[in-house]
Image (cartoon, rainbow, N blue to C red; front, side, top):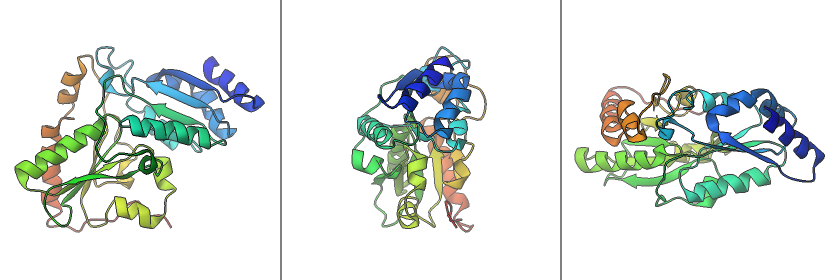
Length: 264
């Protein structure tokens, strides 16, 4: 709390752009002061690490589950969960460009691959079409990933294309707030109407029904184990996600696919 409050004071004075940093889960301890960053329109950059069950053995006391949902529900925040180096660069660029709002950069403990199809320019829109796998002219499924789960979404799409013959488009969504600010035309070009969709995030699924038909995540507290075992335990592996994805595709063969993320 003190760290965030001091950062607010530095930002309000105006001479410097402050940043504060700790594990993502512990921004909850700073909620009073970090909320004032948003309320007071202060450019404070919160660089948060160890952003999911991927931190491993420290266990549920350190593993954020509901934290990102809380941050996304706070007005005037920009919340980033970048999937690779390009998206990290976009997050820093955007945080510096927005002088009237704080930003939270939620970063992983574990190493992540550089994604084919990512770019700083695309990531600045908050969400974008990363890649499509399969030979169909139209996608059978959209998989939306954030942060460390975006590469898992890619591996799931490849599995579904090779094993099940599906055409799967992968969407990277590093910042919902920036994506929400895009035009209806752009958002629907990314989240294609008429195509079943799932999201994959190693956090609470709260809030994702606005964007996808079936959110996949963690709605319990975490656990203590090596992170590879935790991803398997919570069903966040390509094989487990593909199994659920096939059920979603099968269901919407006989049911209308709702159009989501509308703004009126």
